[in-house]
Image (cartoon, rainbow, N blue to C red; front, side, top):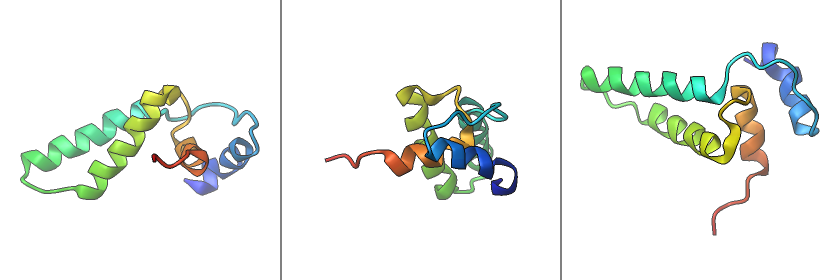
Length: 83
């Protein structure tokens, strides 16, 4: 992902427009939910997927659903810890 989206992430870290969105946070949430459902259907726990989904859902709740999914790392780098 960094090879393809790295320049866009670097622009977002500078507060610049990342350019064209290739894969949105909303799309990632949908895919992560599908992964969890498939795991559950096979009685396989996927804790890393569950935590990743929680991270993406937070971004979506904060209004970033249509944003580039690769940019979620930028959100987390500037997000204030909950007190």
